[in-house]
Length: 208
Image (cartoon, rainbow, N blue to C red; front, top):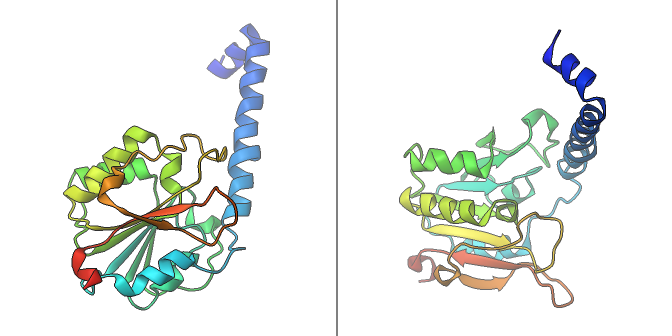
């Protein structure tokens, strides 16, 4: 008799709760999120990123987009840089905004990428790291760990969005990366007090 069958026989109520929870996570959260978030409904890149793009140092040759979705932010650097996107879903589930040049996509979490950076697998000296709120899904401890790993890998160019306070969509919603290292600017045109902001760290020569 298999383990599942034995559990079902001994603890029928508990087993049913576990089964329903698993189905809810699979169908109610994961599948539904993938169907809505990765279909490329929003096609325009963020204004903040477009405005900052001319200030990026010329030696930056790679654009790393954490949580790239359908790739709308890639449009800003398509044809100008190598594009590197990571997200949590298989590429087959993404309906890209367009066909991009030089795109490398990886199904990967921020935590997994952090471990790779800590092992020295990537040199980010020539990389711009960009996140549109994705770090708000990562625990405060792993946010700080990721930032430290970026610096260790040579990265000095980052643009990171923080969602406004009280946003219940994200499990942690606490920005723990040392904000004194960054300039703060409005992320997009937004009415009301809950303005998303971008934490921007670009090399000083970018402003020369």
